[in-house]
View 1: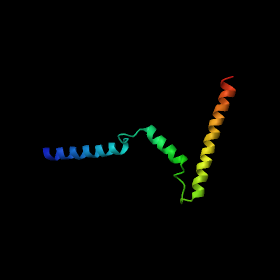
View 2: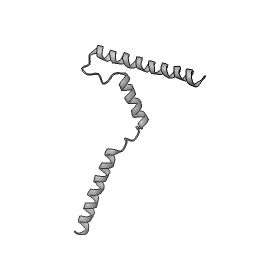
View 3: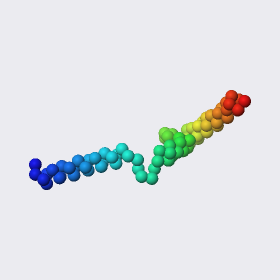
View 4: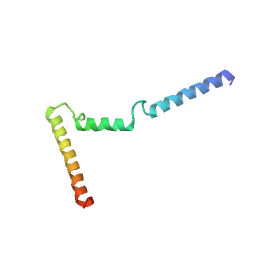
Length: 85
């Protein structure tokens, strides 16, 4: 191998490494918190409902909202009952 071929091989290897890093790294400007918040918002707005049936979408929204309310109520109740007494 001559000098030019070695440099070309190193350049190709560096480009492959840069592509691999780009695939596995986070996009600049987004954080894990932002992605989690967006995922939570998508979950509670029922963006995963199939078919676009309005009854299914609103049923999921209501059920998920009620489950969140129940979770918050239970957390407050258990805190007041067992920790603050």
